[in-house]
Length: 274
Image (cartoon, rainbow, N blue to C red; front, side, top):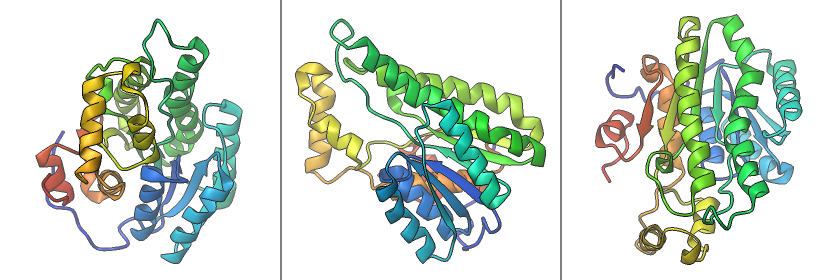
């Protein structure tokens, strides 16, 4: 991986491009959709809640870009392909895909966990990434250009009690992304992963409200402390990292896993030191 200079902060660097962002009704997905629109992209926003998507769409349109809200469950391959077809019918092309949709899943010890809930988390967080990517990728291959960013987590590499479903799904996202990056590099398609850090999202709120006896008590205490001290990252920070990766300054990065807590990553993107 080769790093280039500081990010060009001029607006319009994504003019003429179309982005698809899943899980765009709130949190990192919503912040990312708005950030991409500010940089010139029209955005198809995907989630299971139409009402929440409308709020995101209004903010995208407020900065002068087109928004296409689509209700879809990424874990369902037919819905993923119907979503991709609607995007193609509306915009004709897609340059950017951000696979952000995900669920926390059952936070519970393996010997206690509900097997169906465990499998559902993998279906959403891992198979969902495949479904959406598989539906969008042929058009990127055809046009010989694309930028894909998949949202993972530090949980993929650092095991925590009670997180077997979530951690396994994110580890799968990491390896899927690495393999895909190799497969499509010759088509001028870049595939990367980010670790967004501990962000002020609904998922983080769910974790803080999970009784510590169901998972790692030390991690539970850490999240509570970060929240009380006001140290949770705003969703706009990972959104800026994603925008950097899909923009001109991130064009040489492929097959990378970028941790937003890494000082050199933050410096490249223009984020303040932690």
